[in-house]
Amino acid sequence: MKFLTSGKVKDLYNVDDDKLLFKFSNRVSAYDVKFHQDIPKKGEVLCRFAEFWFDELDVSNHFIRRESETEILVKKMKMIPMECVVRGYFYGSLISRWKNGSVKLPENTDTTLAAKLTEPLFDPTTKSEHDLPVDKTKAIEMNLVSEEQYNWLQKTSIAIYSQMAKIADNAGFILADLKLEFGILDDEIVLGDSIGPDEYRLWPKESFVVGKIQESYDKQILRDWLTANGYQKQFEDQRNAGEEPTAPQISSEIIETITKRYVIAYEKLTGLPF
Image (cartoon, rainbow, N blue to C red; front, top):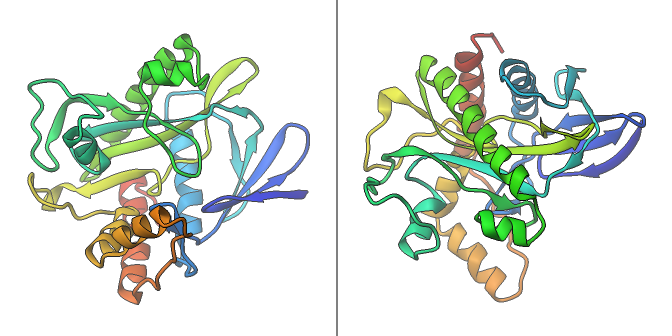
């Protein structure tokens, strides 16, 4: 088995001509900055979530089996260079993009912070170091996908979001948004990569209040801490100056909270003990 590359949160190994091994780590990143500290148990939670969602969702995927507490075996495929984001609530980068006019919403959309959208919004991005939002026209112009592929990805991504949102709702959570990745395998589009709290926002229903920043059981915990302490602006200023952003030390309290909430989210969503 040959090591291929390290991503933001997992390492990839070549098994043979048809298979790859994903090894999930405890690494964490936010705002496209990689941090030096690990989040205990994070890799194991992500690995178990990948197995759960691939088994649970009604769509073809590249998952074969879980190999260990932090490893899954998957089929090789040609990844589609577009990340399929589905948003169910008015939150995150959608707000600033709506304000600057770069994304349009239906006229009857409630633009209160964390308000539910009238319909799930398909809001894809490029797949790169710094992801950029694209609409259908732009995605086709950039040769990311064909028109037929875009239409299929839009319909399928929204269907997956709806299925996951129902499971989350039954477990006492709101699935605010979701990022999916797909690839081509045997001339068919299949779901790939992995799915877990690094790829979606998850809010507990019991503390949900429209108009307020939401309590999160996902990576948003780290983003909120960075923003509150001025690090998000620092990253932007450093990039604008042509510098590589400097990762600060994450507080021990934030690290402990992320670990605790990832585990709680797994147990409640799956109904399985960690």
